[in-house]
Amino acid sequence: MSLDVAALRRSFPIFSRQPPPFHYLDNAATGQICAAAAEALTAYETAGRANVKRGVYRLADRATSAFAEARARIARYLGAAGPEEVILTSGTTFGLNLAAHVLEERVRAGDTILISRLEHHSNIVPWQMLAKRRGARLRALDVTADGRLDLAGLDAGIDRRTRIVALTHCSNVTGAVTDLAPIAARAREVGAVLVVDGAQRVPHGPLEVTTLGCDLYALSGHKMFGATGAGALWVRGELLAELPPFLGGGEMITRVTIEETAYAPPPHRFEAGTPPIGPALAMGAAAAWLAELDWRAIAAHEKTLTARLLEGLDRLPGVRIHGPRDLEARYGVVAFEVEGVHAHDVCQILDGFGVCTRGGHHCAQPLMEAFGTVATVRASLAPYNEEADIDALLEGLERVIRILR
Ligand code: PLP
Image 1 (cartoon, helix red, strand yellow):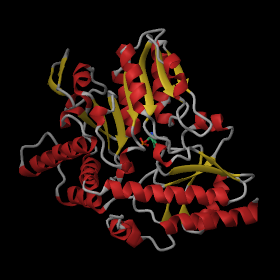
Image 2 (cartoon, helix red, strand yellow; image 1 turned 180 degrees about the vertical axis):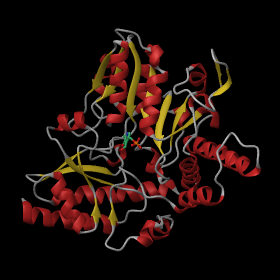
Image 3 (cartoon, rainbow, N blue to C red; image 1 turned 60 degrees about the vertical axis):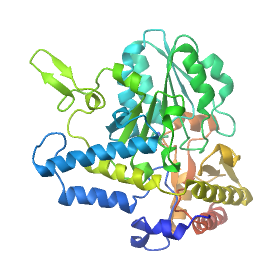
Image 4 (cartoon, protein in one colour; image 1 turned 180 degrees about the horizontal axis):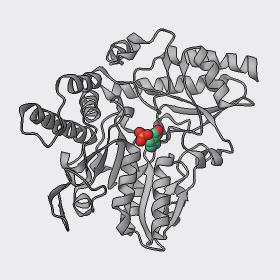
């Protein structure tokens, strides 16, 4: 069955509220909120608001149950062994920083942490800070000319001093998908922990996170059609049980005296203070809604659109694409440059056509450096995109080339 895109678009309030032309191609920055998530957020904030895990009155009890159900829905979407493996966070950035703190004691002076040049700054800076705190060395795998992780450096990059390997599952610039299996195998050989940045993978369908071979997996709700402000960090149960707390405060304890604290079991030990309740409920609702979609049809649809975009860009003079051509090895995140024209100028002209794209370094400056540039344009697709979005982008680019190049 092919995807009924019109029906899918009706599940996203924005498409009936933005005046045409409206071609939203900045999904890697944030996806649009689906109706299920928007309703969950509004219902909580306007009709069900109470703090969670605290009150005994019915409103608070209902909010606590809804929060627990959101965690369970996210756990099911990820394929976690259970909801207790899912720490609710404010997003991928928070999750990766949390990871870098709770793994700190495993890293000693002279150890190494392996990342790559493909990473978003969220998966670079926390590890750099950790390496500095511990006197460890940060190494980075290279990228291939077509913007994929270069696994040729894997054996040399991971050795017996490697304590942590932190890599993206899908690049937010080139759309390249990382083949995690050989990395997980090599990390396991040396006893390193594998952290995966899943921010760009999760909008593309449910996961079986326990079979990926990784130990931690970070994600953001707003990139999977939830609200901004919520995310999750999945941690393999046996590892999670061993990890020390990160932030101290309310709700992460079982008992506090002036001298000592006994910590709550995971995941609560890692969730100090009032969590982002409404956004977490929205993320749970989005996860449950996404889980019911026909992902085979969506994958085919996204591939068709990605091919249309890549072929269209190829036909334009002076346009250079950064990223793999093999549709099996990538999602529809497409970075490109128009020779002689700054990415921001391209995006501004495209905006005149109602086309929303992103121009800049995409929080991936080491990758820009590898590409020998400082900025690219990026068009990133979601299941609700349609051929008209691609065609509007290509038409806008023809104008850019006519007037600026
Ligand atoms: N990692 C990747 C690959 C991303 O694309 C992003 C955001 O664009 C992040 C991490 C950071 O996500 P957030 O800003 O939701 O914390």
